[in-house]
Length: 246
Image 1 (spheres, rainbow, N blue to C red):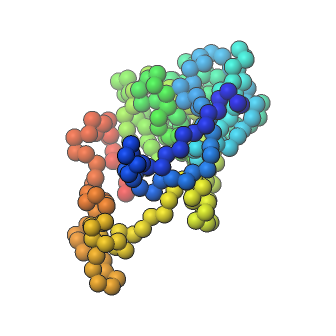
Image 2 (image 1 turned 45 degrees about the horizontal axis):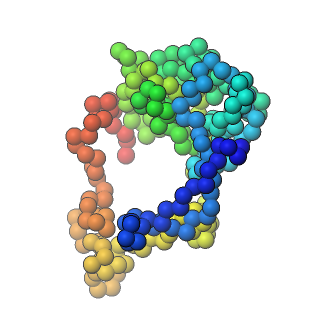
Image 3 (image 1 turned 30 degrees about the horizontal axis):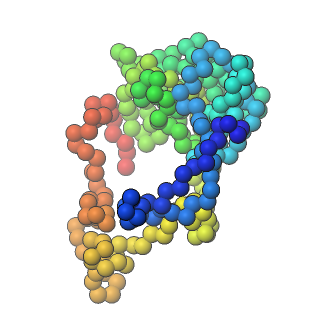
């Protein structure tokens, strides 16, 4: 759908002076960005799946929907959604794969994706291939979501979510296969820290093959790279009921 595509601006990881500010970026093949409908705000208007397409900018496929009023939009394609299936969004929507409805209307044990953290902002959670979250409980204007990482988190029940598990589950088993393909994806080579000199990386230096020479690994900027790196006073801590399992 030509109107829903724009050329993706390339990013080589340089700042305004031309210096590398983000490493390992550059050389990406030309791509088109698809305008994805994360909000699902065509309330009460049913749409039909007219095509299922590959999107190079994300891991799951996208489905092109033609609504009754003639408008076309892309949505994330859940597992089991087929050509000519009908989808709808709204409070009264059936609990069918591809339909979007309020979290408060979805029963316990249902798998959902494209979940809104802030009502009206659009889905931000569970958007990758093969992912979904399970409704674990309803409580005082919130729902408890069990995420793929086994973390249990509170989300406002006035937000929207889409029923089903996202498709293209085998994406995680894909093998890149060559360095050239990685370059086409816009990812430049990574050199191990221990192979660099001490001015370029905290792990660098030493005679022969040496270890990192410190109690815990560090990033190239000298920050801690493993262990608990989450901020202790992060605003969303109060919404996490059970931490993810490492």
